[in-house]
Length: 241
Image 1: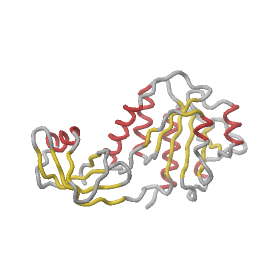
Image 2: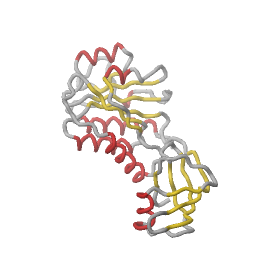
Image 3: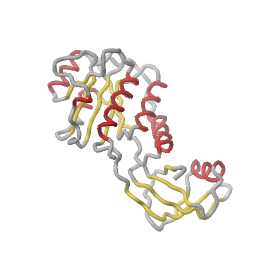
Image 4: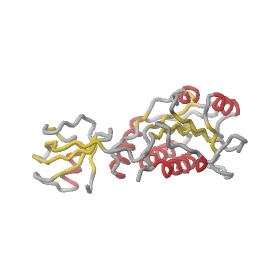
């Protein structure tokens, strides 16, 4: 599989469908595919779809779905990232893109006590998650959630889920990710604050809510760097060989 195409639709074996304009351009104009070629699609929900390219006109292409295969999650648990909004939009873009490459299931923009006013661009984030999906050949797209308060996002970590809250101050109850036993959890939520981190009141609320405080080291990390450190550590513990 040299290239992976994404199309937001339900694929059914044996059916014919029209390529989206973007997929038509990339398959025909860029990759120079011809009728009779096999191309690979995903719906972003874990399915790998084998498609026979049947027609390729100047403005439109169509294909026939040969097989639809549900691919296993590369991680033992679903991984979710909830991060405080950042002042510089490009840093949020980078965070979402790298999260997608690390098999992130969902991204939750957080409104915290220390959040500064920042633009939210869900449409752009959706495009970035699709681009990262195709680049990394991941058949699961990051789901972009609506903005939530810290308490609202913590409530998503229902029984059976693990909530990890990064705190720059090491406390007696803080743990390194390497020290955690996390393989039994169906969903894992990693919480990161904005510039300045979480407030003491938010940290206290997190602990009272049953969240586990984690410590990522003595150096002060930007939010997007902390996300990469935390997600990478979790990815290595959760990856299924």
